[in-house]
Length: 397
Image 1 (cartoon, rainbow, N blue to C red):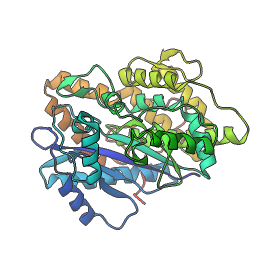
Image 2 (tube, one colour; image 1 turned 180 degrees about the vertical axis):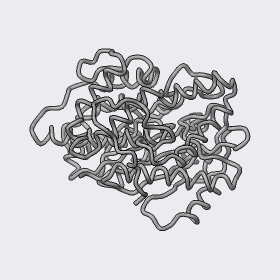
Image 3 (tube, rainbow, N blue to C red; image 1 turned 135 degrees about the horizontal axis):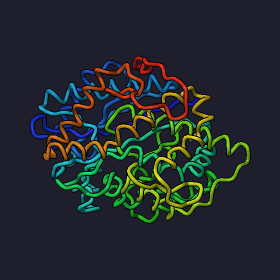
Image 4 (spheres, helix red, strand yellow; image 1 turned 30 degrees about the vertical axis):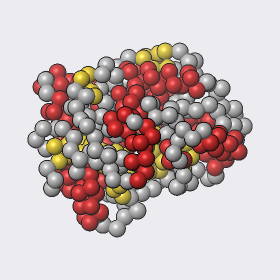
């Protein structure tokens, strides 16, 4: 089976007020001192109000889920020492003025891009899946591009920004697309064409370097993987696991289509951008764009299309029951965006909304033996039949 790994960006918030706090330097140092030797890691980000945790490569989706939980627990423990929580929030519900990390590159970005880096504080989920070659990777990119907006809808977890309800399920996606290279791309067709397009983008001078190729999906610069970057960081670790399983199955399915000579869909990037916009606006609460017809359809129908598309690969990987249960739980309980709005309707306090998100991590750690890796995940009906083992998270490792 292909290996996979994830990167999750987490928001550091005050334990009393829920407001973001710039304590990443201390949390990073503490986490590095605490962590046992591990190819996974904890790294700083552009803003000192956030931190990123990464897993090592896994073949088992259950083991990946275990490390996601352990990573979140580690930074939560260390953040507590600085009066903070490490919260799975894709944007801050409360107003914030971010503090840029002390890096020459980040200061160059401040000078070059003005208010975008000064105001940017968003947390995403990046999923890496191994590929056999760059040629296979480009073929995968060309064939998964119409499906990635569905992943955005599943992950939607940023309805609030600057102290107001934005009207979007994923405002992170809207804010992120201010960067010049963010979003979907046209088909590449070959590895050579991929390299040519990347170089032509860099020659414009609009980007500082290749690290600023903020595409929805790309070939990783540092690993032999396809990197899918479209999602919000999910509220529940179980959603992270579900999305990772779907991404691996998408890569498997696309690679098989390529080997069999099946052509990719000639969907314009502008259409995929609009599909992203609908997913960011509505999440799972309204309609998404059907990747097969390009027309709007109820979100549940489009998610079922994705599940049907990748089910043979999910089954071959042994991930079908876990992913089906994860999707069922999402529809039963709602996305992170829907649950944040419900919390605000109950409390009327955005700081308490942020603190409630932090508590999701604590409950998930306590209830890690449930099917979806989260706190009370595993209660919804299975979408496509079958029973789900009750202890599937496994140990990190």
